[in-house]
Length: 310
Figure 1 (cartoon, rainbow, N blue to C red):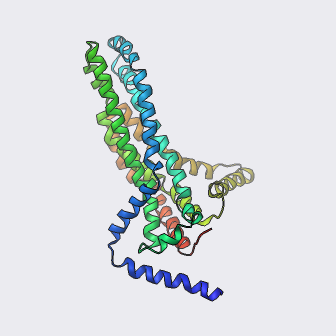
Figure 2 (cartoon, rainbow, N blue to C red):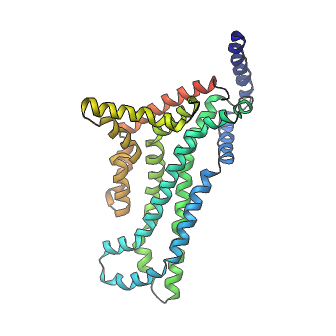
Figure 3 (tube, rainbow, N blue to C red):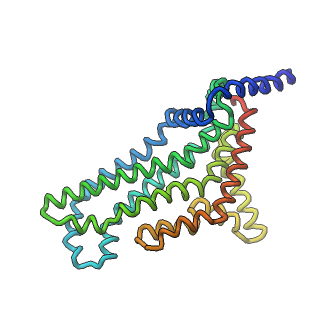
């Protein structure tokens, strides 16, 4: 009985590899990512819903803009930028936080849910390798969600600007001050970089770890994902009275000093902000994190190869 169970995965893998050879890897990857978006509609429903709620609140509070415009001539340029740009920055942070939460919960359930509902048997029968499947699921929080968050943020801020301009024009006021002080257009390239590199590439080891636990754990994967780092941090604190491991994990969550600097430069319209991406790309921490991500994903691929329904 045991020998038969050992042979079955081997034959399944051979059949799967032969069938997969007939399809280009890029095409399989594309349709695998589309399948993830189709099966997990929370990926785009949650940030869109948050953006709509924010826009509803912004539309109600738009009357405050008229009061702010009356006070604008007595403020200096930096104060005007802070006054008019604050709602747009809050929209960025709100959508960004929503996407991070969605990415975490998606990653911890991505490979566990298919084992729980036994759909893994169906997906393994298709000519899609475990490597393509795991990479497609990893691409969602690392690439797809940051791009989606950027698109939703741009549409949200553009709608805010249009509504504000319409209200000001309707009241007979000049919209030139608003357009010149909001400064969202020059921030969009930096915002795209921030979403993709900080909340995508820089946090990729976290998503890879969650995917690994998702394919390994039989019950409560979120508990198994949090328990080892928490245990290591507590043991380090008790034994050595240091918090290096906790700082390392926190650095990945926050984007590190480079991520904070990029957003500060971008929002402050600092002329040095163009050098921040280059400094980030040559940071050894980025490439070490990507190497760790590759190793963890390789382990997840190997685990999924021999995993069945729970």
